[in-house]
Length: 87
Image (cartoon, rainbow, N blue to C red):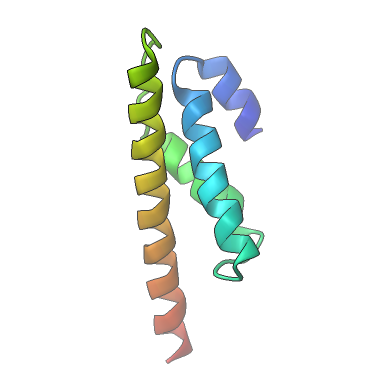
């Protein structure tokens, strides 16, 4: 469903999905999050992204960097919540 949303939205949204997916999947593989958290992180990053028309490689690279940063912030927030729940 998220890939269809990215495709339908177009512009920089597919790059956002890809970047957030790479961060979230790596966190799962590193046992930092549950598999069920992966789409939640991706969807959250996509929902905050305002898609832009791709007119240069620079826009794609900026989008990728921003989405990765947002995904990392979501992971850190999720980790803090999880550790607080363990107390």
